Image (cartoon, rainbow, N blue to C red):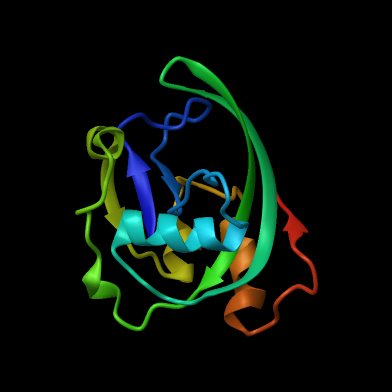
Length: 139
């Protein structure tokens, strides 16, 4: 599941797609935060698998500068038709333009911008069941 925001990517002007996620709240582990954020942004309650990738992002959102240390976890969904926006924040309701499931092939053929940036090349080993021993640092 990927989301796109109303504002296109600043560098390319193309649609910008990112996975569900958000910040870690006080007292949460990264895995607990991933589980909570996945539920809040999709309505899905599924087991969170291993951390596959990490990424550092520095950028501006809503006029404020942020530095984010991101972790990407594997999560498998048996019924992708159950997506719900019922727990979206006011900001998410205002900013998220569209959400959809993408196939690996669609990502590879698209000229849109994805996070992580090399998502199309990062997915094949994961889809083949070849998970990294430790999270890979990605852009």
